[in-house]
Length: 286
Ligand code: SAM
Image (cartoon, rainbow, N blue to C red):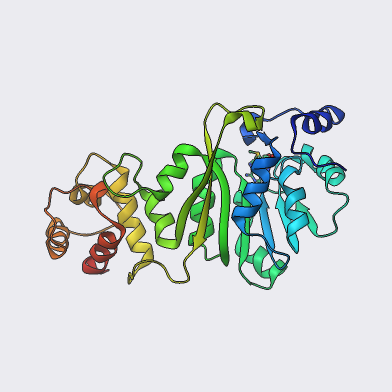
């Protein structure tokens, strides 16, 4: 089986199986070998690695992963792709395909079962509709992760690594930056996919910190505070928290916590850094 990362090879397999692209699954397959090689290089895959691939499609990137990793588990939701993957990956004995929705997979148990709970690498050309839930789930559920190398919408990549005071800054930025060092590896044009998406893409690598970047007594509460303050972007931090049913702080408590970090009561959440959210959560207590 030849490599799939060209328009010709992709078209051939699509025609052979009369595969119909499903928009609802965000199916845009990579058809550029250069980009595929760069993704593998950025993920730093070695012969010792266990890799989870989310959404293998017809197996384009999976072939590269099988060549460089010890073991690959690829989770694909579309059952029409399973017979195709059987053919395109038939030469490899270090890959397992699971026909499941990744959002319903217990990834922590999967890492436990398939890699004895040791840190895994995750590589994906992600369907854009699941980017945020999957990233949050991967970090928050305590999956043992070394790094995540993913293709996402360019603006989402920006959102992951931007800081306070920009329009892209939000709960996703803070969650990613709490857990990982985020680095944009490259921008990828729509021409590198079949069919072409109508958004620009970027590959981002998230290298998980050994310890989170800030100290916080109650992680869950800090993220509730973060979400509450970005739920209503134009509201002040105080009003955002007051309107969140899951948080029970009085206005006085919130204003006091803000003054403890030297901030005015009219400040908005979008101006606060991760360190400041952590300090506010600690001052607010439970
Ligand atoms: N990795 C391939 C590539 O780079 O050419 C395909 C990438 S394509 C952007 C996204 C893939 O994810 C599709 O194959 C799609 O069917 C699959 N997918 C979409 N939603 C999924 C989900 N919830 N769980 C698992 N796979 C999913």
